[in-house]
Figure: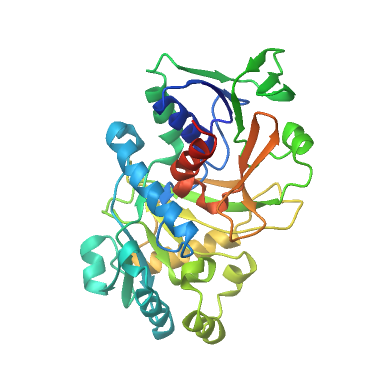
Length: 373
């Protein structure tokens, strides 16, 4: 079978991985020299902890298995199975964590309530103020800025794989056939469009009523911390944004402990991951209203700095870089991804939202199974 994958972000690259793994001939086309979208501008989290029960959790758990398998084959991914810590400062926050521990799928997620001293054993850098932590054993991380490159280097060892950067696919000219802006026609048994948040051009033409929205976020990265923070960290504001924590305890948290004004205005949570060089990736915000601003604003960064320094008990290292990113998210939050046949032999796979890095290996595996690869 011949497969054309359009897009070299993590979703597209995992589709290429599945096709090559199954012995097919693959051409992967990317409009940039390298993917530059949400696949690079994220935390690199494989985040099982907050996923909705049912299909979303099952997808995340399967993806976690696949990430570990691929990470063993491609060490340059930087896969590390360190779990995660959601730090708790109040009784209301602790009550949400305890409700999560009572879920029927808590064991599958690897939930455990830790004391502050136990959390500091996991992450020695946490010398600041908090009372307890919700640990999730199944969470993990990779290096987002280099993961796609590492995967593609491994794919390139196969004679069945070809990467064509710097080409934009402009037209679907027939069954399983697309034409790029170099005028080259690519014929295959299946075309999979994994174009991320790029929803114009050919995607708009093929799926004009796409039930997907775009979401903008802001993040930052520091110089090396100089301390060990192996497990990714969240604050309890993250409870407000992940479906696993919905329920009476979360309602009481919302009523009794409103978010700080800046956090509420920018729909914020703290997520923090230590990179391979020791620096910290810190975020994030959520902006849904179009048109998005073209600049970043400082108030969210100030808020994140205050929260992180409170947990670390020390000033942050110098901020090395700040950025904004945009990802595509299904308008129906209950859907893991939007997968649609848009022409004969042409499928569109988009809209995983903030689940893209977590779930991409399993999303690609499902596509491959459904298409009979």
